[in-house]
Length: 168
Image 1: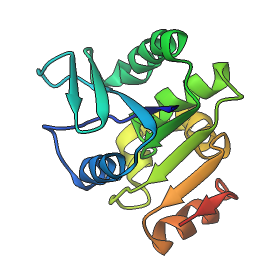
Image 2: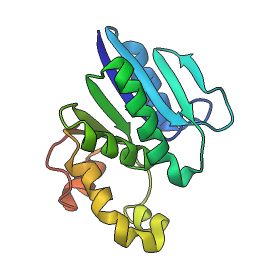
Image 3: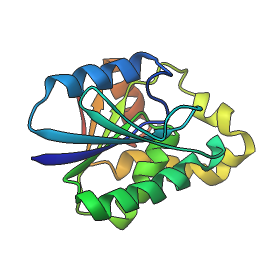
Image 4: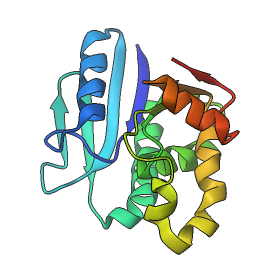
């Protein structure tokens, strides 16, 4: 059985389109063990939702990438993952990137399902964007594959010259 570690900033009961898509995809695939590291919004630390073992971590959202990375390292020691999957290029993407730095042989899939305006990351990070932009870019360049839900997102990533490996 193949083992996949998913990084997602939010998951059920905090639901948006990306979370629904992940649940639908993982519920329809057999022969895989899916584990997810996500932020704890005041719910259980662990639960099984559909076909996913959901591990929730607490802490300020600013530190989610680091806390999630640490949890992923502990889970990987136990489970030896065959692949990682980041749901969107947000804080989950940073956690997946840190994991990739220390586990370069484990394939990293990035799903772009953002619904924000193209300049949203820069506006959201404010002055820190200057320092974080190289790392944000690396989320795209270190991903082994990038899966997008629209031509618009594929074009956005390619226009930035961040994604040469995009597929739909």
